[in-house]
Image 1 (cartoon, helix red, strand yellow):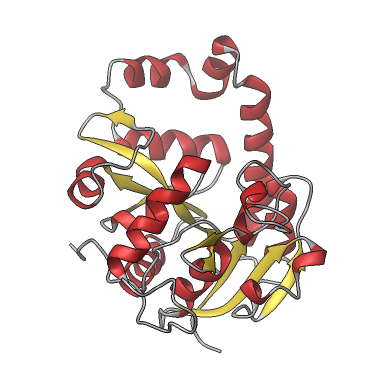
Image 2: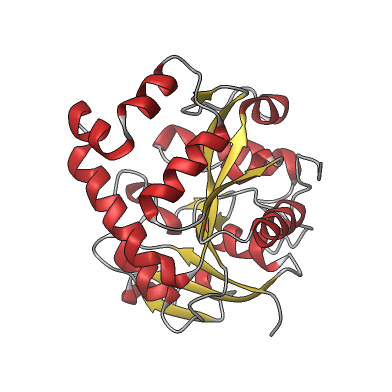
Amino acid sequence: MSGITAIVLAGGPADELAALQPGAPNKAFVEIAGKTLAQRTIEGLRSSAEVGRIVAVAPLAAHAHPALAGADECRPDGVRITESLRNGLAGSPPDELVLVSASDLPILGEAAVTDFVRRGLTADPDVGYGCLEKQKHLDAYPDLPHTWAHLKGGTYCGGGMIVIKPRALPALERFIEKLGAARKNPLALAGIFGWDVLLTFAVRQLTLEAAEARASQLLGMKARAIVSPFAETAVNVDRVSDVAAAEALVKALHPFADRPGFKGEHPTSHGDTT
């Protein structure tokens, strides 16, 4: 099967979102207009010719769930997201880029996936973090909230996809552990990133290129931001209040999406390829 391998992280514990769906092991199995988030995400990935094999990482008890039927393989999740990622990456060639996706992207479409994969392959990083420029989001979905990082030359939020070479995972895990330990300690954060980076970020003078350079230095490998022009890559479902918004978006794209047996085309992407 040609195309990049995609891993869908559908693990994690039950939370207030999962409580909305009887029997759902976590939020990936909550329905949005008649389809679970995991199913909508997998369908979005599958719609792109750039994606080959799809591996779903989810609780063992959910492996037979219809939501995961579109995946080629299911693997068990871990207690932590890095454990789930390790399970998903197992067996992949160490130097071959893998696409990793969150499982809560309800309106992900073919154009957005294709564009993101191509940008990732062109950049060829060891780790490529998906992000979205603020104006792209406001142009498409001005009423949806996000947490924004204000940089010199642009304002960005994180997206729901990354690309990674499996050999980069150990360094990424160590970095994530350091961040977790330092998240409430400004001095510790300064020790990780450096005062120069924190201060230039605080006064909105940190450039995206400088952030990439420092991340590459800290990881000891090539880190890049993969800036998508497609707003749907950052439309996810994190809170109970996001469910109604996601359902409204799906129904706006597909007015009959919640009718039994509906098999309409996948959403048209909001973005461009420039």
